[in-house]
Amino acid sequence: MEFDNEDLRTFRLSLKIFEMGMTVLDKTDFHKISRPLLEELSFKTGETVFMAVEDKGAIVYVDRVEKNTSITTSAGLGTRRPMNCTGLGKALLATYSMERVKEIWEMRDQKAIYTNYTIREYNDLIDDLQQTRERGYAIDNREIEDEIFCVAAPIYDRTDKAIGAISIASIYLKMDQKKTETFGKMIMETALAISKRLGFRRNQTYEKLIH
Image (cartoon, rainbow, N blue to C red; front, side, top):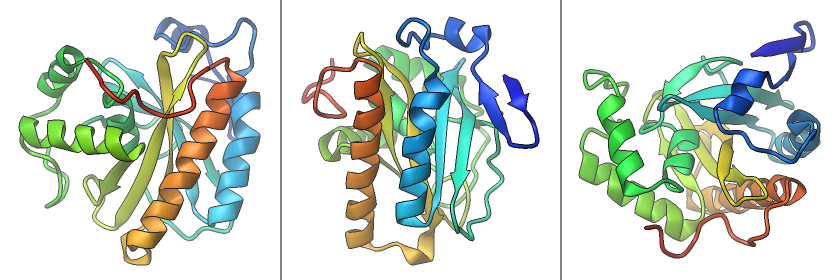
């Protein structure tokens, strides 16, 4: 990760990130495209919004936007976290093949149980990913931090490849079914808006069938 201005906490994606598979439009500034939409989403929800990419079976946080939010989380720029128990990670995993999901599951630290809600069984993860595809967004219900609830959706490029994900993070006690659905719709709309600007052609976050 390379930072343009550490005081402003802005960044530009380094060559290494592109080598990880972020095949965006030629000469496109990914941050400039996504940042205004992330700021708008944070302002509308009053919550923290994150963006992350995958690196070697983990997610890496590459942006964080906070507009009048009181959330406290340890996730900062450059933080690495497992994919199986984060909304961002599951949003991406739901776009992957079963073979790749299994590979990433086996790469995780099997002793790492973060909360009482951390997914412990592979079949439970598969069920969760299927629900993610059906609803259009992933949910992290206190799976890695006790009081944090997130909804997340994938970002695609012009080749229809998922290159990252974005999330809304909130305090669990503030969330209910209606608010979850509202935030879920908003995260999907924002993820699709960013994807469209990168050349994505579909109008939904997931294919109906994932092979």
